[in-house]
Image 1 (tube, rainbow, N blue to C red):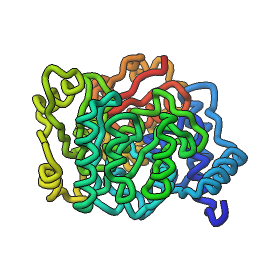
Image 2: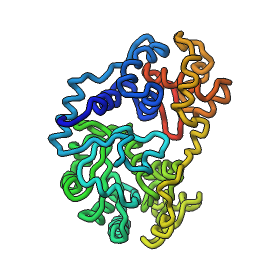
Image 3: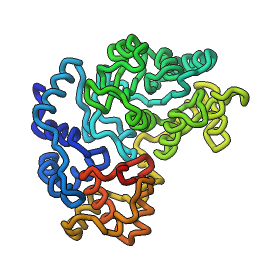
Length: 373
C-alpha cells in the first residue's frame, strides 16, 4: 500500500501471525520495543511452550490484504495512532488494528451503543430508531453491530448523521445478507469498523470480539430488547467491566424479549426511557478517565513486569510446570492462577504468552484463560 511505513507493515504482519491475539500483541510490543523485534522473537518464545513454532504471516499475505484495503478505500488505524478511539484503547484487550471505511470524524464525538434482539418487536424497533435519531441530534454518534432487529433500527435512525457499524467479519462481507444496502450506505454516509481482514466470513467466535469493540467505543450501552442468554447481554457485561454506563429499556414481563432488559435493571443497570435519560447519565463522563478492568487487577503494566522478569524464566518446555498443571479447558482468571501458582504476576503473564504463541492457550473475556481443547 502506497505510503505505508516499514513499521506499519511489520505491525500488520505481527497482528496477522498465528496465535497473536490482542493481549499478546501488546505484550510483545512492550517487551521487544518494536514489531520487527517481536517478529524475530516469536519462534524462541513459542518453543518454550511447544515444539512447533507459529506461522508468521508472509509478506505476500500482508501485501494482499493491503491491496484489498486500498480497493475498498479503507484505512488502517493502529492502536497507538492518535486517531484511535481513546475509550476503546482503555479496555483490557483493545484491537491492535481497526480497518475503517468512511468518516473517521465520527469517532471524535461522544458515542452511545444501542443493541438488542435480532427478532425484536416492531414497537421496539420503532423505539430504537427514534432513540438513535434523538441522540444524534444531540451530538452523539450511534454505535451498533449491523445485526437484524434492534441493531438495524439503531443504524436506520442515525443514518446520514452519525452512525458507526462494527462488523464481525471483513469490511467487504455483508452479514446478514439482507443488510448489504444499509452497510454500503454506512460506508458512504457513516463509518464501518472491522477487526478482521477483508474477505473474512463471520464465524461464531468473531461476534464476542465485535461486541467488545461496540462496548469499548461507547460511553454507555443501551439494551432495548434481549433474551436472558443473548449476545446483547454479553455486550452489556463487557461495558460494565470497562466502567461504562449500562442502560436498559424496561419491557413487559410476559414478553421473553424483555426478560434480559428487566433482568439487567434488577441487577443494577440504569432504567432509561428517553434520549434525555441517556444524555443525563453520560453528560459528565470524562473521556480522560482511566478505567480499571475489575477482572484483571493484578495485570498492572504488562510491559514493565515482563521486562523485569523475562530473564528469570527458563527456556525449558513448560510440561510439568505448576502453571500448566493448574490450567484446563475450563476458563480461569489470571488472578486465580497467580494465587494458586505462587508465581509473580509477571511470571504468570510471560508463561501465558509462551503458551498462547505455541497455540495451546485460549483467552476469554474478563481476563480468563484456558487450555485449547
